[in-house]
Length: 169
Length: 413
Image 1 (cartoon, rainbow over the protein chains, first blue to last red):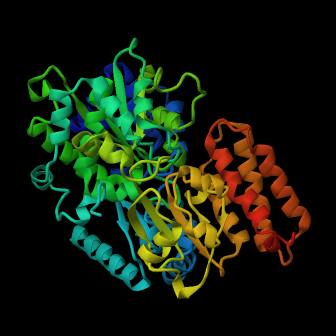
Image 2: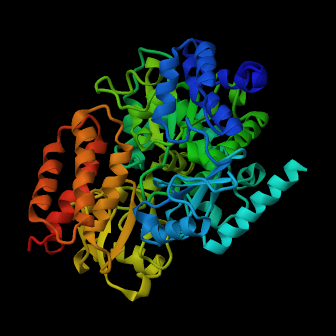
Image 3: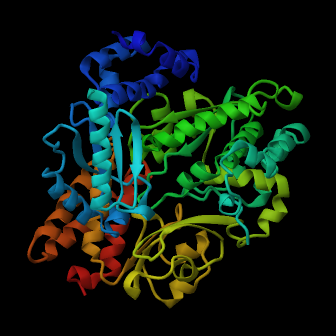
């Protein structure tokens, strides 16, 4: 199904925010829709968005490439994006990152064997007072998880696994 | 003193429309639209002494008065991109006192004659944006947004727009590019946004915290606001306190408070009772201040922090204790700026890349090489004054001040 069919209501609502002659502004919100549902932005989606907004495919690709929340490659269903910037690192984020990698048996940027979680380190997320913290990027959009410990990461992983089991049933 | 911005700390559930309304909400917007001319609103803000809270500290009312009245339509944009490492104040405002921010945005829009305003939120603030869409809908239902407000001819709509992870979009012209659906790369200035901003039209851009001050200023008057703070900086400021303190968090204090009050009275002191070695008052972009009694006890405003050899910026105060290695601090800030450089101008794109490489080498090597320190300083100084926007300049701050003010940590003592 084409994006326009799949998201006709959302796209109409997004376009209504901007002057008709500047519909290019809709490129980022539409990319967010695709990213959320598909976990990455495919070349086909970029082509469709370009046609929809009367811009070139290259222009869409340049936006996708510029912003870190648009992923060109598929990865785990959930991305666990841990902030290791200065304020978080002053509160143990580097150690936390290592612990998580060891615990899940992955390196930076790798995905767990079951394909559920990709671990990566990211820049400041405005959660410096609640470090260690990470954001979850996945089918539910973006959520913050703060005041983190390995125990709390495990609780989070369990809840994801339960969700998965429920969906498969 | 009770809070002016973080009022939710005294009033539970202030993020709910009914609670905000019951506590005097939207009366300032109504007063502005029904009883004041747009220029009177701008004058009131001008007279209040309010300065922009995003980092530059530019007088807010003056910024509004610069908007070109010969070109229409006008736009107002709220900068909710909050991405400076160490800054998390706008997030608390939008999570817990969102209507005061939206009311301030609405008043500003009236003052400059804008019928459309955008809130540009960093993409990570996904949940905040979802909540804000609902809050905007509630205001529309209550007749506070939409056509012919309060029976006048004034109309206003507010829309949210999510970024997608790019620090540079906090720079106002990069933000505008992003809002127009492009890569967030800063524009050449002039023309300034007040003349050619969003969609090429006159635009006022302010930080979330700046707007959040406005309803109280309109409600209580410029003199009331001016009576708080110092002659250099009127009113209150939210300090995002992070790093090696016992109680990191946001603290709203009048200008003229001291770092000692902030760190010890509010922040509960330093972890493990270590001494404060250094303070970065403006996040990762900050010059590094050597902490001593004089620095700790100086009443803070924009001018006072300048005398310490730094800028107050958005007041994201990162505290470093005596266990923190300055070489490591610099490696962290450089990694950040190398990642966030937009790539548009050569000094920043190349400079942050090479500084990061040298700094990584300094971190990994067994012995610190003097020529690496010289080279790092050399690259940093070559960048200063040559970058298109402030990002490149910011990336050199911790490097230059770190090496010059803590020479012993770089074998230069």
